[in-house]
Image 1 (cartoon, one colour):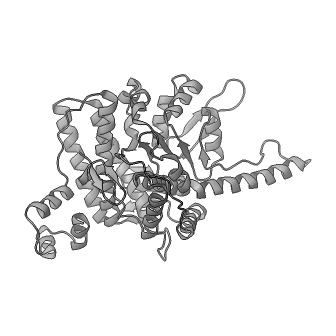
Image 2 (tube, rainbow, N blue to C red):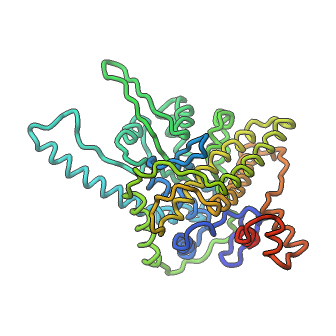
Image 3 (cartoon, rainbow, N blue to C red):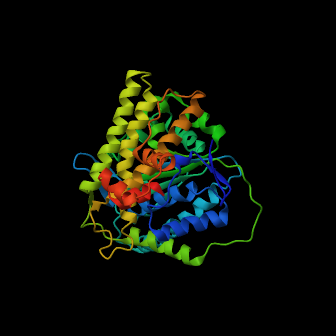
Length: 422
């Protein structure tokens, strides 16, 4: 049973796995809550849109590493909700700053192209290009051209996401699955055309994805056997808010202060120079948290392997380990927006990792629910309580009279315990 929120009249997936917001900077929290207030939508929609937009603004210019694996700040989000739940407009509000940058880049391209065409001594092999940051419906060849011209990376925004897969099938005739798998990894793209034209290599490819879909279309869209077996499905992070309310229309509008603040954040992230900090690392504290979480997923994989051998669940847990690193990098950089040193802090904080892991607990449960929907059965998964859930259960069932003493007894930072027990 979901957890009913009296304030916004919505149900969340489970009480212990709500998609949290408290680890984001206050100004971004205020912007997200303002969208929820105005558009009466589940808070999950603007949260993932904010994460995708911010990651795209930084793009391929920064990667996150633990010293062993290096990952781009690239994530693929899908909002799952029934028709009429206002999935589209809140996301469009979040993406406005990216749309503005897209238009500005196109205006620059138009001016440069006109000047190039007017130049009688122009270099025909080197025309001006449009540095596009937002894409929707596009062929595989056109997307490769966009990658080639992109200085940062792109965000593929696809309302009614089933159409995205339908388009891939129509344009590529089956060869798109392997391309999408490699795209998630940020692999180089090799283009070999017929004729005398030389082969082309596009390096450092970056594409976030943001889309939505109705629950009834989950099976037709994501239930394709090749998607499930290849691990394509588990490369997506799903939100699945429970919606039982359709509020009446009210005359409301976004507070310009929050809109302007968000616009400033995105523009700062997009136009900043990251040449001095191309890599961010896990701090010793964040690495310890990530190590514990990583190993908990390893243990879940071992149990699945020794019981059901369910390949989908094994893939889900493996992708969560990768996505955690990527999300931690995004959250860390968001925390630097008001820092005196800007984005030049190259160590992911303990707080950023702790918040990220709580987010991943939500995405794990929603990923399992998506699997249930597309299969029509419940996978044989033994749910273990996380450390945070255990601590909250102790508080609920036993009580904690002295929180500081409790923290010291566990050898944990009191501020960490305080956040957990909120």
